[in-house]
Image (cartoon, one colour):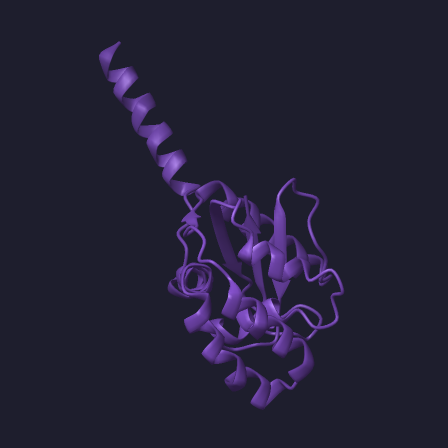
Length: 169
């Protein structure tokens, strides 16, 4: 009886460890970058010209800079294994379907692609050109969010590389 219990526990442990998803260094870098802008908005504003020199969007970038220079720092986000699982699942879904679309999860989500550096990916979401609601920016800066995860899709979606799925709760 004891031998069967040990074997069962060992098998369960193997099964559970097979489903643990470990974030990559770039995915953890995304958390650090998002926390950087949340906790040091005035300092983070200095990176905007670096982005606009390459990608343009000066008018919307000026709007972001004004907001960051007046913003009160907010709490750091904590990494969430649950959100990471959902980002991983959705990232693989959009890769397999080759459709760049949001999930139907109950929490806030950002998708970004085409930018090779994590900083430029975050700046692109913060500037949020082409999105009147500035929902991507709001997701990143929302003081009510406490948890975060980001998954980088391996490969391209619709010929766009460097795809990140961000989840906030």
